[in-house]
Image (tube, rainbow, N blue to C red; front, side, top):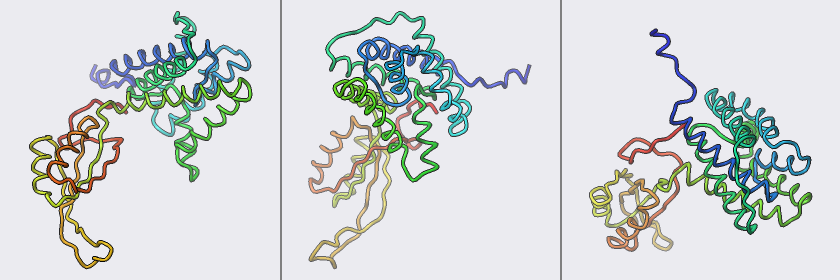
Length: 293
C-alpha cells in the first residue's frame, strides 16, 4: 500500500480542469468563429486549418496527426509530463470537434477575427497554465533554436509568415490579413492569460533623493528593494565630476506602475527610471501567484 500511495499521476485535478476548460474554449473559437468563416491562425492550428480548407480532410484528424510529431519532440525537449498533457489536450480537442455542438458565429469579419482570436487565446493560455499546449509550434521553435543561431520567436514568426502567404494565395489577401489579426489577438490574449494582469515589471531608479525613495517604496508600496552601489555624473563637458549614488531596483505589478511614477515625481521629478517586463519572478516578498510548469 505504501508504494501505491507514492505513485505520482502526470495530471493533477486542477490542471485537468484548466485543460478541459481551455480545450472547450479553443474549440469554440475554431468551430464557432474561424472554420465557418474560413479564417486561419498561426502555428500547427493554422497549418491544420489550411489543410482542412484546401483538401477538406476532417479537422480533428488533421489536428491530432499534425501535433503528434511535436508532442513526441516535446517529450525530449521539455518533459514527459508536458508531452502527456499536450497529447490529452489535442485528443480532447478532437473529441470536442466531433461531439460538442458549437454554435456557428457568422457576423462581420473584423468581429470574427478579433473574438475568434480572443477565445482561441484564452483556450491556449489556460492549457499553458496547466503545463501543456494546444499547439506544438513552440516546441519546434525551441528545438530548432537549440540547433541554430535563430531565436524561438524568429523561427515561429518565419513559419507563420509561410502559413499566411499560402492563405493569401489560396483564399485571397483579405482572408490572410484577417487571419493575421486573429493570430495577433490570440497571441496577446495568451500573454494576458498566462502572465496575468499583474505581470511583473522590474524598475531601476537612480535619484538624488534615494533615501526617501527607498523609504517610501518599502513603507508605502510595500515592495522589497535591492540597492546597488554605483557612481553618477560623467557628463559631456563635465566628465571629471561624479559622485557615489545608490541604484535602487524593485519589482512591481503593471497596475502599480502609475502609482510608482506619481510617487517618484513627487520626490524627485528628475529621477532616472528604467522599467522592463519580467517573464518570471518568485521568492522575496512578491505576492504569491500559482504557476504551472
